[in-house]
Structure formats: structure tokens, C-alpha cells
View 1 (cartoon, rainbow, N blue to C red):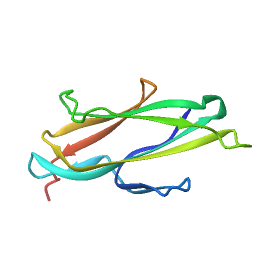
View 2 (spheres, rainbow, N blue to C red):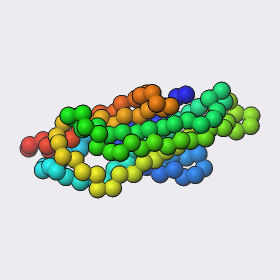
View 3 (cartoon, one colour):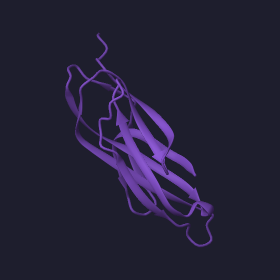
View 4 (cartoon, helix red, strand yellow):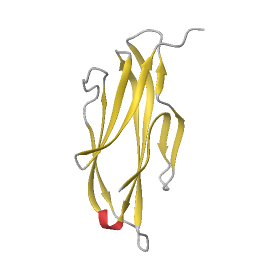
Length: 132
């Protein structure tokens, strides 16, 4: 298994033809006041080998700077099957968050798990805008 893309972005869309559109990837949100709401996406593309075929559990969780889970677990079970004549298959997963509320400044964590194992963590910094 290989995580090819895992990023926080403005917008992500699965085109349905093995193409994943990702616009505006970022790791900082500048917010003058909190709490504040923001629309964003998480883009994920995983590649599995033929030997990995079968059901795969994918989970994404967002954690606050003080360690609190900010989202209910986002758990998806995907059926992977390599196409005939190919040794691997990719799976695209765009996840949209509308009006997601941030209540704290600091480093938030976006955690990706596969089959119950944490495989990657992204930082998402919520900070005050720099002063001119």
C-alpha cells in the first residue's frame, strides 16, 4: 500500500475516471477571531498492489491542539480489486467539510488510518494573521 496523496485543500473532487482534482493545498489557516468556520476538503489517493486486494478500512480524524477529536470518526470500507493485467489499483477519496468550526489556535492534526493503523498525520495550523 502506498499513500500517493494526502493533503488538506480548498477543494477536492473524484472525476470518476481515475482522476482526482485537488485545488489549493495548504497547512495554515489565518483566522482573526475564534471560533470561526471554514469550508475545506481532504484529498486522499491510495495505491494498492494486487496482493492487497480485498476490503480496506480507511479512517480520517481531526484532532485539536489539546488532543480532542473534532470529528466523529470518518470510516470507509473500500473494496480494492486490481484491473486485469495491472499490478496495482488506485483509490481516490475526497472528503468535504462545510462550515467546520475551529475553536482553538495552534496545531491541529489530520490523521489517516488504514486497517486500524495510523499511517500518516498532517499538521493544520490555525493562527492569527501576521501583522503588517
